[in-house]
Amino acid sequence: MTRISREPAISPPPSKQRGSSSLVRLLPYLLPYRWRWIVMSVIALASTGATIVIPLMTRAVIDGPIRNQDQQGLWVLGAAAMGIGVTEAALWFIRRWLVARATLGVEADIRKDLYARLQILPMSFHGQWQSGQLLSRVMNDLSAIRQFLSFGLLFLVLNGIQIVVVTAILLSMYWPLGVVVVVSVVPITLTVLHFQRKFTKLSRLSQDQAGHVATDVEEAALGMRVVKSFGREDYSYERFDEKARALYDTEVDKVAVSAKFWTLLEVIPNLTLIVVLGFGAYAAGMGQVTLGTLVAFITMMLSLVWPIASLGFLLSMTQESFTAADRVADVFDAARDIHDGPIDEVPRGGKLELANVGFRFPASGADHPTDSDGWALRHVTVTVEPGETLALVGSTGSGKSVLAALLSRLHDVTEGRIMLDGIDVRDLSLSTLRRAVATAFEDPTLFSMSVAENLRLGNPTATDEQLAEAIDVAAADFVYDLPFGLDTRIGEQGMSLSGGQRQRLSLARAILAKPAILVLDDTLSALDVHTEAQVTEALGRVLGDVTGIVVAHRASTVLLADRVALLEGGTITHVGTHAELLADVPEYRYLLAADDDFAEALP
Ligand SMILES: Nc1ncnc2c1ncn2[C@@H]1O[C@H](COP(=O)(O)OP(=O)(O)OP(=O)(O)O)[C@@H](O)[C@H]1O
Ligand SMILES: [Mg+2]
Figure 1 (cartoon, rainbow, N blue to C red):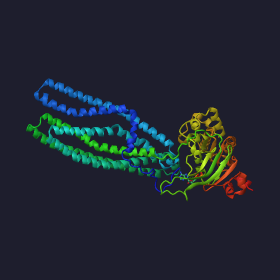
Figure 2 (cartoon, rainbow, N blue to C red):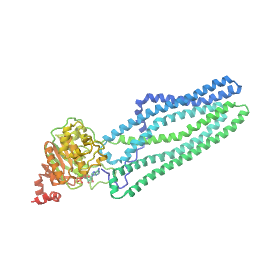
Figure 3 (cartoon, rainbow, N blue to C red):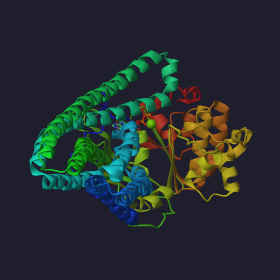
Figure 4 (cartoon, rainbow, N blue to C red):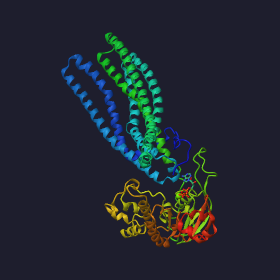
């Protein structure tokens, strides 16, 4: 189903910006991994500590053993410094290992929940969202969140600590030089903040554009047949090229921004270094600082460059993950307007009543007008007794498929109600309702799994005999001739099968579900006359046991039904037997007249 829109679809609506709150909501996903997390943080803290301590040890070495030519002291302190260095390296390794395990787990957990959410979200949601956008949220955005949780967050804290502690130490070592450093930190920080804002805007844009590119690739793969048959590969390529180029441009802009940023970031510390060296040499000459202190000072000062520089990168990563979390939250928060009812008992009778049913597709924004008054169905009232079969006949676009979709609550009625054995379908739990109502859609979708798995979708516990019976009724015995019989994997959307073959499998799938209500939406349309006759004959037997709703365009299918309802412009205008309608209703005659058998049979 597609949404009608004048604009090139930029659905879904731009994500709501919620600041950090979306990300905070995802934090509970860390809980199962909390011990790894805590250990990891302690280790990271320890290794930052080592980074700070090493210059201080250098000072001790230079001002102590080296100055006094104390061989033994040199060995001891040197060994200690080496020990700390090696430990630091080891700690980094352990941390990376821990962090990878913990955060990959978090990513997988969120991804699974997101997928589960997508499964329960209503058709109206899927009608509005491009699948490429969903794809990019499930893949790219989650990995942005993982990266932030795995090191962004941690380093933001650690670098903050390191900057404060090291600056304090620098000030206490020799305050005049310390002040020089502090002063030079100001322009760096301003630069960082300035570029971070630019970078964030660009990265938000590129995240959206990546979604568009994904959508295009996906549509191209699914619609390849159409594109090729019209020879419009060029057009399709151009459309893609446009989007790919937009993404490329944004990415290049991102690089340009960060290149400028890094250049400035090289220049400022180097200037500071020159000043510090000059002053420092002078102060050392005057005996105000020791040589060891000067070396330690410079080492420590330089160790500040990376934490400060990375602040920009970390802040934009933080922003990126906020955006990503917002985009993920959009999916989690999407209204689930079809809710479970309390009743779990599967209705077995199969009496179906529609009372004054009306349905209107949810207005997707004021700028998306649907047809005239917006109602797809209005004032539909009809009762189908248990075991009876009702044919739905109507011109194309009259609302037959919409009506079929209401029965299993793919959409909910906008007004009126649908009752199954006297119970409003909204009071039944969804799983119960969907066990009771099975639908074979007009566009039969098969999944990339084996034939048997596809058929068992509606009834996982069906025995082999039941499977064989359903295949028989649907005249789908061609499956036995497939290379691996029922175990043959059929391609994406069953592309390797013909339209009629797919229809028959979809029919067999619905029959196998053994529902109380069987809904066939124009399921026989793609069959040749002989196969159709064969299926119709067998269906007649199946429909004897269940309540059936059969959407039909052909008179031969109509004959399956006990009664016929004529749907015109979303309303049932006539109900009666086939013969009655043929005799009394000109519109009905007109709809079926093309069928030669019946044109002759007309009174
Ligand atoms: N997702 C949707 N959003 C908005 N309008 C829709 C949507 N799906 C269908 N419609 C509209 O609802 C009306 C009825 O559509 P429906 O698919 O029920 O027709 P139909 O009777 O099954 O036609 P056909 O015989 O061609 O299958 C049409 O005007 C269609 O444009
Ligand atoms: Mg239809």
